[in-house]
Image 1 (cartoon, rainbow, N blue to C red):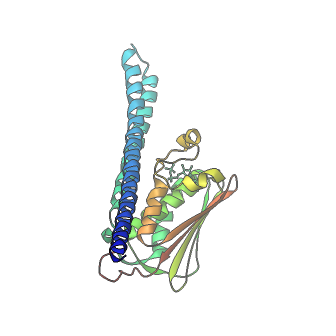
Image 2: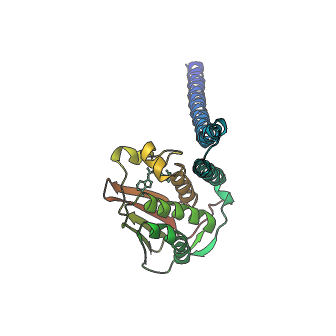
Length: 266
Ligand code: ADP
């Protein structure tokens, strides 16, 4: 009976190990799949502007006596594609940096009110072009331990989107509040909104709601995954509420004190 008991125990252990091994294997497989999908998406996104540029350049080259206006028009399209390629590469580099471990954060006390004011100052001319009102409401001064470069990136993306996906003469409201533990940044817009079926996907890399519509607006589909990564690195949280044709609100919550967990590294 005793021997049987041991046999049964070791059988159980082997079974448990096999299960754990299978679990690990399937996790590795899914990691590998998402990496492959990411690489294939990156290649596709990087190739698109290059393909367009090639078509534009080729069509100029095969034509004889191209009028200077046509030349200029095609060159301006090529310049747009270069700009797009540049934006994709910049966003990708930001994303790769944020993918590294959170020990890469450069934490220091930052006055969050000033950080937001600076972002809005930079984006105000873009909003003004479409007569979009950009308002900042601050309920109290907040100093928090954050990585100012990464937090600036996170909030800039939200405000840029609130302007981009807005209507002419619309508004963007940014507010800052805090309690004893967290500070809260809210970015609300009067824009086109996000369809319900897209809400769960907006943080995915390269995801854009309406490809054809969004293409005209311009973007890489990387902004919100950058924002989410940066917020998570600060051990924060991000939530979105949206109604089509009414507007969108993003709520970000970040701890005021960045506490290193026991044992040193995070
Ligand atoms: P993009 O570079 O396309 O702006 P993001 O990752 O920042 O990429 O956003 C993903 C998609 O989510 C956008 O393409 C857009 O369709 C939608 N989106 C993001 N922010 C807003 C917003 N404030 N209002 C409406 N749609 C938004």
